[in-house]
Amino acid sequence: MAVAVRGTRGGGSGGINGGLRTFFSYRIFISAMFTLLFLATFSILFSSHPRQQPLLPSSGNAYVQRTFLAIKSDPLKTRLDLIYKQANDHMTLVNAYAAYARKLKLDISKQLRMFDELAKNLTDLPMKPSYKSLLFEPGSPVDEDVLRQFEKEVKDKVKVARLMIAESKESYDNQMKIQKLKDTIFAVNELLIKAKKNGAFASLISAKSVPKSLHCLAMRLVEERVAHPEKYKEEGYKAEFEDPSLYHYAIFSDNVLAVSVVIRSVVKNAEEPWKHVFHVVTDRMNIAAMKVWFRMRPVEGGAYVEIKAMEEYSFLTSSYVPVLRQLENANMQKFYFENRAENATKDAINMKFRNPKYLCMLNHLRFYLPEMYPKLHKILFLDDDVVVQKDLTGLWKVDLDGKVNGAVETCFGSFHRYAQYLNFSHPLIKERFNPKACAWAFGMNIFDLDAWRQEKCTEHYHYWQNLNEDRTLWKLGTLPPGLITFYSTTKSLDKSWHVLGLGYNPSISMDEISNAAVIHYNGNMKPWLDIAMNQYKNLWTKYVDNDMEFVQTCNFGL
Figure 1 (cartoon, rainbow, N blue to C red):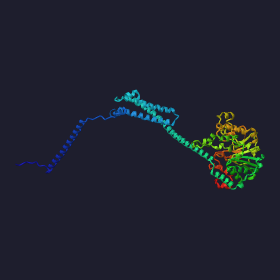
Figure 2 (tube, rainbow, N blue to C red):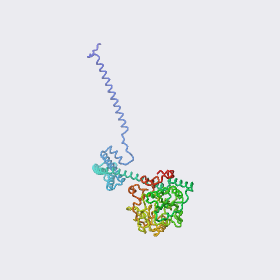
Figure 3 (cartoon, rainbow, N blue to C red):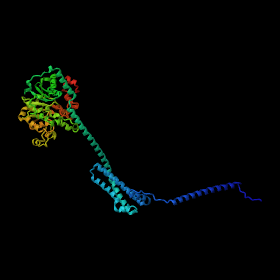
Figure 4 (cartoon, rainbow, N blue to C red):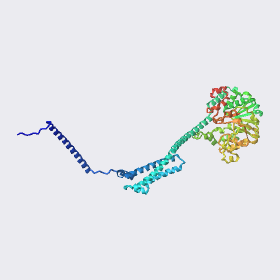
């Protein structure tokens, strides 16, 4: 049986096309099946596990919960949150500037008060009942009209805050810099005060100590006396020592080198040195060294030197001299001589008051000049830390107008008045003396011994020194009792006779120094110490006898 077959162009191409259509139909079918399966699975999962609401924090303030909900559901709550955050940020900024103002201790209290009030208003604004119930109540919807009113108030206060901050920022930045500078200055000032106290303490230690070179010199001189006793036999009495027609000087010291400088400077500048007589008084410890020095190095120009120990004056006993009696007092000895480390570094001024030299008998000998030199009419008292630059015989020609003491006054303005030396809170001092009375200087004083005897000045000194045993009338030294003793019996001399301060004041004019008859190294920076001021030291060292062998041996370094 014959079968008819329709022929096509291209021969076998119809079979190939049919196979492609079958392949792509199969791919489409499989993709559709997987898609349906995925959708069915997704639907089953969501139908068996319903979607849950996201969990909100269970603790913390309600506003945070509302914020989460607002973000999720209500645009008005989102807007409320942003407004609240803006208010809170500006409140924090205002508080920060207010804190700066308090720290800086500014005088602009009005501005500080405005900052505080503005910060309080921003804090209290959300707490208003109308806002709290309609905007911040948990679960309640946000009223848009109330929200607009709240937003308006917040923006007004933020605007005010920004204006205040803009005005204050530059001022506060400058004030912060100023405050930091003040803090730095205060800290540096504290260090300066501490350094000054330490310097004053060190200076007092140096002033109280005997330099190694001076100790060496005294020991060498005593050694010389012991090694060659035949060369240093006692000299006999000389009539010139009591001749009132000559020029007599009193020098009380235990410093051999300093005494030699004073005498050499007087003699070198004297027109008639053979008419000058020097009465040197020292203590028993230094008498041998003093005598050996002036035997080895006799004074030039024919001047006379009498050397005695204060123990040779028989009237200087504790029964007659208040200072000697006070030195025997146990409380006085404890005050001046007890060594307490906790007091030493606490207060340099207190340590100065406790310096035993202020109660040393050598310092108080000046109040007994008429008894020590009964045949003399006038005597010039010199401290051992002075240098004489001119002939001093003119002082004996000064008319003292019946006064006892000729001295240079030291007051200027309100300085160096009696009030600075005496305790005017004490009724005895207040009653007897004028606090504005001008003080004068010890160190170069011409005394009329006849007037002294007539005025009974030594008796006045004894009276007041006895009253001051408890140190309530004055604190220290010989100047306060001197001011009292010669209160109305002092004649003011021309200032060119005596220039003071070379032991503490670096600002003295060199013209003033060169015109002075006597320059005085009063203060702690004595010229024989390492702490001496260099600009003045050569005025003293040029009178040192450097040819003396022991000065070279002891290495003074002058």
